[in-house]
View 1 (cartoon, helix red, strand yellow):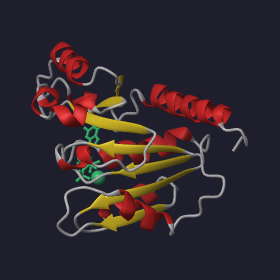
View 2: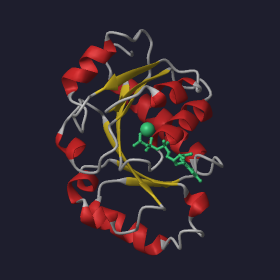
View 3: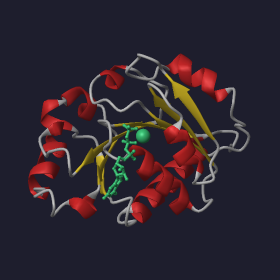
View 4: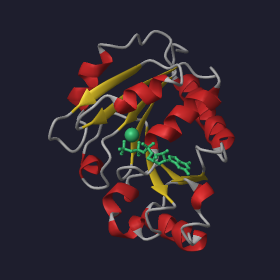
Length: 196
Ligand SMILES: Nc1nc2c(ncn2[C@@H]2O[C@H](COP(=O)(O)OP(=O)(O)OP(=O)(O)O)[C@@H](O)[C@H]2O)c(=O)[nH]1
Ligand SMILES: [Mg+2]
């Protein structure tokens, strides 16, 4: 399966983006979600609105997910025929960058509301990104968002990352992102000698 580790600062829109991603995929990929927070199952409840099975991990005081926590959560999911496993990490732009969860793609969100310079201020998170999602572009004008500066900073700090500009609230950019996920899944399927 294709496994995503989704990271960003608290509140930059991970849960909303992922719920709308599963909806926009419209069944093209059989998807499950694991979500980490210090406390509450709020995000799991919101993500379940997409129709996907969701397991909530509560970390207590720990500011990131670790591979062992994911392994334990996987026991609560039926993995048969699963195409896509999405892991929403704890909202934090520092600690989760140091922990490999066994993902295929590291997806880092940068919302237009949090400042164009975040990729420069939190380099490890962005340097390790395979994909950068600019989120909440519907709020760009209200925030005096400087698109050229933000994209320039992303290219500098996340040179490997494919960039998607999105607004989960309006659906902008979700089609291109979903097509990318389907293509990535196909790519991996083609490499699997068993065709699974
Ligand atoms: N206008 C607008 N608001 C958004 C968008 N995406 C998320 N939000 C709002 O941003 C707030 C935070 O969104 P979440 O999806 O909870 O963010 P998160 O990154 O999952 O937060 P944590 O899990 O706590 O780190 C909520 O009030 C959302 O409704 C968007 O595309 N546009
Ligand atoms: Mg969340």
